[in-house]
Each structure stands twice: as structure tokens, then as C-alpha cells.
Length: 230
Length: 307
Image (cartoon, rainbow over all chains, first blue to last red; front, side):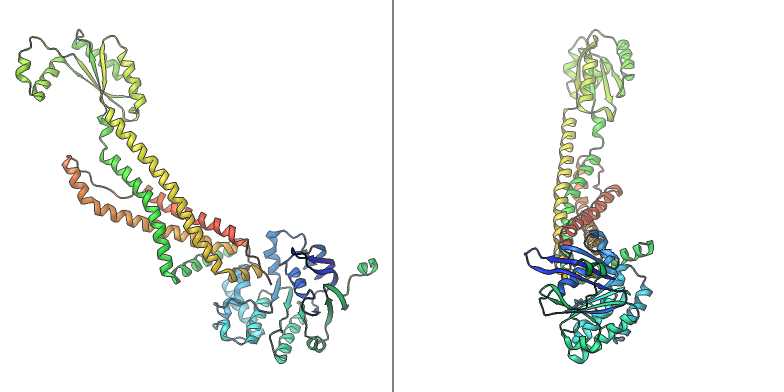
């Protein structure tokens, strides 16, 4: 599902955020990317969601080479990926329903289908019945779950989450992670960036540790050919 | 994309655009007013030209040419020449005014009856009065006809009574060009107004656009509501311009009709004809769409999602 071969990312200002990162995530896996802030976790997720392009190396996400994918194919590519942000990026002036429906509207789903899927997604995150509320009326944890509902509403093959528990108390954090675990149990690939070691230990999923833009531990599970070439 | 999705997207974009315009009525009305006035000005000039053409509709027929034959030529000769002129291209009508007829008319209209009685012979020549076809009434056509006929040996002189008509037509020509110039200038103004309005709206909805792109909204999808907004502005502005013009025409009808009456005309000013309305509304929508497209194309590509 995700495959990086010696991927580097250098920003226009010269900062090298990632250096020769290689790892592999199989379909249906749940993987944690950990490391201190500034280690390159966010950059990695941006590369996967094609918010940025890799500077060097080869990167394949959901069967697409993100280094060479044409700009006009990016929207369709993004529709295959559900992204959850630390600041959840909800539209503050739109009700919960509209926020969750946005990816479906963009994809041109029929209204009935949208209604059904939004309710299903909200049900999965335990927010059914709050469709008409606007995000500010919700607690931080609820807002984060609306963001997750939006990410899963389009039934993506891959969910990428950047510090989804960063603003949550430990109890809520575990709850949100259980949600992700449930998606991965039904075949969705989930990649979660977090600095919360407690969470990682609790879930026991595979971990990739980033440090100063390089893979420094965990289990990156690179392809045998890559191991051989080192 | 299947047709149903396409239609749904467009309907959503249209309803969204309408909703946003309705939610900020004051700003919408002010923008519409600016666009409406900008469209009304060239349209009013155009209306002036068409009304002037209608009011002076008889003028093209008023162009005529008097061919004075040499004094020795007989009436029979004049008839023969008239027959020849009738076969020439661009000639609508030829009448022969015999010397005797000319004298009678002169006696009747000039008031010099007594003085004419003193003459022993008729000093007037036989005259052919030529009315050219309207489509052959340009200055060049008339000049060519004048030269051709003037070269005949029986002809003394050809007098063209058309200078003022030509001047009038030239004035209309200037006005028509002015309409075109005003349409281009004010059209550019409308483009700028709509482009700027759309730019501000894009800035206001920055977050929404970013998130939409983030979840896979294509540029076309993001741009569509703005294009509809632009078209609605153009359409609304055209409607306003049309109402302004109708009001102006209604306000002018009385005084203009009185003025026309003094000139013995039953002329009444008219509003925009169906075809002109088509141009006004079509122009408004196209300008709105174009202004929005230029602005959206330019500003939307700058908004790329940043996580």
C-alpha cells in the first residue's frame, strides 16, 4: 500500500526534512510512525497525501508513484486516502453533516448515498445525532472524531493520521486509536504519526521510528531488495 | 464523470452561489449596481443610435439627385434618358420634371409668379429626378452615379442633394463606433469588478477551498461555484441595466414624442429590441463567467493544501 525507497525531501528553504527513508506498509496494516516533533513525521504524511512531492527516491502509495503523478490526477488520488489532521481542519461555519459529507460531495456521490454514508461514518465514531451541530459546539475530542468520520466517509483504502490524539486526554486518545484499529481490522491500511509512546505500547502495532529525518529504529520492513542493496 | 454526477455538481454549485449572494444582500446589490450601470451606459448609447435611425427612417429615401439637361434637349429626349437611367444599377426611381412642369411648380412655390410672367420664354431645363436605392446610397455609390450620368453629352449638370444626409449618416457612424468603444471599455470594467469580487470571495473562503482540495476536490470542482457566482452577477447586472434603460425610455417618451410632433413625426422612442436584449444579457453572462474564470484560475492555483 505504501512503499518508500530511499525517499528524501528537501524544502525550498534548503531544510532537508527526510533523508533516504525506506519502508513498506502492507494493505490492511496499522503502523505507527513515531519520533520527536521535527523528526519528519508530518513531512512523511504530507508526502503520502501528496501535499508535497519527494525530492529524491521512489515512492508508491496505493499503486501510484507520487513523484510522477500528473497534477490533474492528484484530486482522484486524494479521494482514495482519508487524512486526519491534528487540528482536524473542519469547516467551522458548516454543520457536522456537511463537513463529513464533503469528500462524498466532491466525489459526486448521489444524495441518498451521501446521507447513508455520512450517518454510517458518524455512527462509527459515536456522533450519530449531532449532524446539525457546528464544530464549535462540540468538544475537542468530538471535533477530532468528526475529522475521522470525514476521513473514513469516502471508504478510503488508506487512512493517514497526523497526531490524531495530540489534543486529547489519554482516555479519549485510546478511544480514538481503537477506532483506527477497527478500520484496520476490516482491511483499511492505517498510518498514524504520533509521539505518544504510551499509545504505541498499548496497541502493539508495528512502529517506524524517525529521528532527524531518518529511519532510526522500529520495524520499517523494507523490501528484501532494499536490504540487500545496503 | 457520469451525467448525473455532472448535473448534481452544477446544481450544487448554482444553488451554493445563489445562497451566498442572498446571504450578503447589501454587498450583492452594490456589486450588481456597479455592473448594471457599467452595462447600461453602452447599451443606452446603442439605444440612442437605433432610435435615431428609426426617427430619421425616411432619410435614406430623401437622398436624391437632380440631373439638369442642356437647354436644347426636348421632353422626349428626357423621357428616353430617364428610361436609360432606370436600367442602371442602384437606381430606385426616376421621374421626369419637364421644363413646363418645373415652371408651374416654381410659380406655385416661389411666390415670384408676377416676375415670371415677364419672361417671354421658359428658362428652365428639363430635369430628371433620381432616387437611388437605399443600399446604394453611400457617398461613394452616389458619387459614381453622379459622375457616370454627368458624362453624358445631353447633361448640363448633376446636383446631389445629399450632403446633409451623408453627414447625418457619418454622425451615426461615429456614434456606432462610440457604442463599440464604450462597450469594450465598460465591458473591461465589468470584468475587473467581477474579477475583484470573486478574488475577495476566494480569499474569504480560503479555508474551505483548502479543505475541499485536501479531500480530493479538483480545480474544476472548486472553481465551479465561483463561475456561477460570476455568471449570476453578469445576469443580474444585465437585468438591472435593462430596467434602467426601460425606465429612461419611459421617462423620455413624453418629451421626445412632443419634440417629434413639432417636426411632424409620430416617432416614439422604443426600448431594447429582442435581439439587443439578447446581446445585453448574453454579454453580461459571458463577461461574468470570464471575469470569474480569470480570477478563479489565477487565485485558486495559489491555494494548495498545507497540512
